[in-house]
Length: 388
View 1 (spheres, helix red, strand yellow):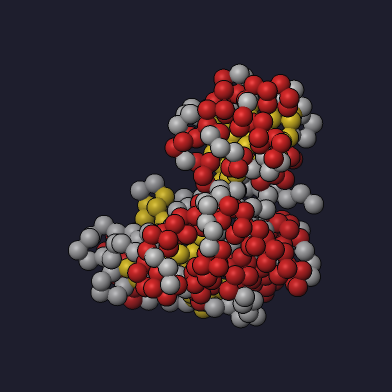
View 2 (cartoon, one colour):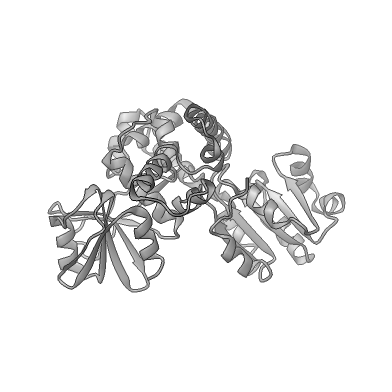
């Protein structure tokens, strides 16, 4: 079953304008499936760079590679992050009038060693596991009651949005798929791509992050707890972030004297993966997990959330910027009232809108100092934000 992805509209706009389109994102998020759907009815060559013969010829002699494999003007290069010095070779093929759609499960493809060769030739699209909207499409769900929506949010939050997981009906099978995917991601995308040999310490780091979702990350405390050096911790975090496993969220601040401005928070791109790593698939939704879920939906909708925290103790879970609008977002399991921290942010920045997003939300709207505060569910929040 193919589920149409939200990036399709942007893809259609740029497919004729750019010689190279790079679709990047986590392993098994649907990159290959998406591009194979786009080449249906089109003459194109599909090449998987996990194949050592294809990869070796590409790396050793690009002209022989061209003669051997490129018999159409359009080619799909899948998992090209495994290739060394790909930048000049892609440039040669682009200058030879080939159109290429490439995928990568690592942001290593976005490094200056590659992108510097492709300026003006490449457009980059990020594809994440299914958003809630895509999840509903996969489930064939359209109109629904509030209780049904809440149950579906729980399923999406608990098992995540990886297409293969979503389409599996059996809950134990979902857990097995997630575990296998995590093992593959850790070994191939993180350890192999970033030359990490101590898999045990890497796995301990990922579990540490899964148990501290939404907490301010102290590098010194984390390194000490894990028994690794500060540089090693930074290397692991960088590798996991560039492999689309976690995202380090920086703080939002304007007043450096009043606001804490150094340490990030760590969230997982997919909450199902987080649950698999922490080995917890609880029937009840916890506050930190719900917060991670809201972050994940914001990320998939194209936003870059930050968090706000003052030295006086006031804190807002997320802040997103849309044009000149600064919009605070609080995450609550039972959302009903505007609390002190959000009031403090509203008083400081005078935002036009704010959201209290809840697992059990009332659907109310309040006005606080001319700021419209919507108390709503995750899906409704995303619909509002994408209209601004």
